[in-house]
Length: 285
Length: 255
Image 1 (cartoon, chains in turn blue, brown):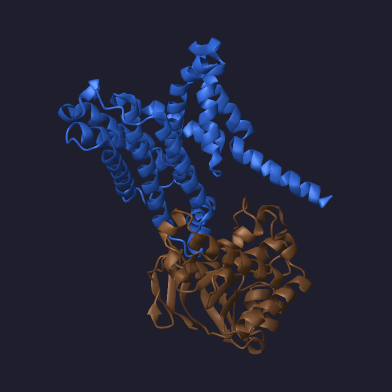
Image 2 (cartoon, each protein chain N blue to C red):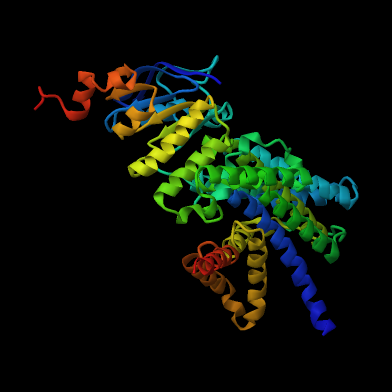
């Protein structure tokens, strides 16, 4: 039994990291920003953290703060040129950002190690660090969701015209969402670097972008538990369907399409809406 | 409380002049009516005043400040609230939640307190929810306070829009066809509320088609047609103006 559990611990660690990236994606979607920049922020945070320790000899704890700052700063900066874009144009612009970060990390070989990446990063982050990180992040996002920031995000997502008519500066809240998204992805990227020994640019490419987006679409983009459930499903799916290991991505795609068609609000938010509806229905009778 | 003035305000959409040099004043403590046939430029005026459209010419003054070039959110923060002709609610949210969003400009707790979920942020939320509940009592909707806004009837949704606008504690309220599609009883209930708001010192600009309603309620009327002012003054006089009658009922000469 313990042996079985131990075998699954690395899976848990990687699921928590995926969840961190999914939360970075969640924050922007909740505010109505269709950014897919998470993978780029994650890359910047991961490389910043690893390089601060490996090249400058900073202790990992300080380097992680560096990851957070670099990610958040990248988010804040990116929000400025993108302030006038909406919807699919935001997606395209942020996709370009991910590609730029990917190219830079490939071509600035003296700093990033190019395609071979960085190796021998000290493994300073253990599973229990990650568990604490996830709990703190859940608390922060829960608090945020119930606060005036969450209300402003919800208003900006549902109807931007209403939001500005109520005095909510949508540009400012979109910038905040970008900054939070960058900070969360950057910090999670730092944790990733200090948990995995090595970094290569490809880890922060299109596959991560799709995985983070899929976790939020699958789980739900309003409730804080949405990305957790989405990540859990995506992490467990390959384990449950070992026999289909070859068709893993096919399965992924099929599942996503089913969810988009039948549960467009994601698993958690749909369940929540149904539950509310059922409670009201009973109260009415 | 400040007076709203527009001075020779114009708006062109390409070759179409939707608003041509309109000058009007909306005084505190009064209900000012803006009426005119469809396409006269009434909603364009609301969009110009609230900064959602940029004026092609002229000025908009609110009290002593020139608000012509301000962004919509900056205009709202000065105390100008509006409702929408085509109802715009956050349909996923409950009635109370829709109203609470309206308190945005009165929030005092900082970013960090909100981010960390500190008690100050939670206290503020409770205070706003209580104030929102008081508004639902005023609009006779307390029983529906927790229902999702999107599931309610048209008349109720209109009321939610008004409660949300009032949550901003505006000094100027722009109502874009607030009683459209309502029967006389419902309209008169709302009319009484508008009157009490004006009596409390608020400036109210009412855009409406319902002539009886406007004539009974407004202190001053402006009549526009094809973007131009054709009459203004007290309702009793304006409604007898031959140009106004021609604009509404058609000109004998055209027939």
